[in-house]
Image (cartoon, rainbow, N blue to C red; front, side):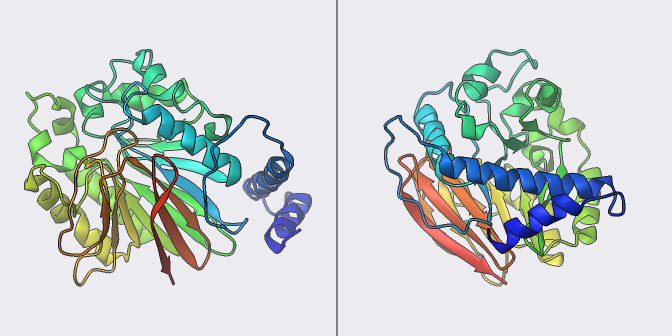
Length: 340
């Protein structure tokens, strides 16, 4: 038993009222995850699987998928990429999925009973190892439909973890913590705020309230690793309106810099991009579409770009964050580590 597993088991054994019920629950949760890893290692998979060459990731790392721009009713690689995610999760302990928007193309959903929930999500990401927490956001396509239904879907699906239009989640590593801040980017962009247009609900949301919340959350965070995620990019090569990125930079970039955020994760552009602008310490990661992808080329500050569809795998510990951009076959296109 390694050090972390030993400490987790010990913490679960001696978690008493002296530490409070919250501490006991957290220790028990960590102990259960250690037990799950043992069960996984002992499981024999009899179905023939395609081999996916994955890196050797330390057992105690915190691992998660970044997956967005998904909803194509299973077509255009969506189903095969979903199956690939499941096969990876059989080999690596994936604890959750970050899904920053556009789960439903093209016009969002009408209600929590909309059949699109089944054809875009439930029946596609059906692998047993994907029955984990999905921390989600609204993208611009969700804003074409009933955004309240997206917020309410957690009452229907136990894995749909959307606490609000914007929220944060803290995750324990070994001695340190990581915190991910989920922001609602569509209302931050003026071109979506016309109350008479197809994104009518965006114009009803307060920019000031969200920015006030984000600054307070970043200022109050004690996490070593701070990651912000939203649907729209601040920096990217794209044919989409430049005003989207200038609005995002105007509202969000000062806060990322002020509070020393490590990474900003997004989608929307349907290709892979890793950009670090001159003079910036923030890594800007554009995750590709989980279905259809688009052409891309480098811009100033580009470290990598690719027009493959796929997902990104993140693996974190006290000392570093590593991410792997994977195409639809599970091939690692790009790997990057940020340490501190």
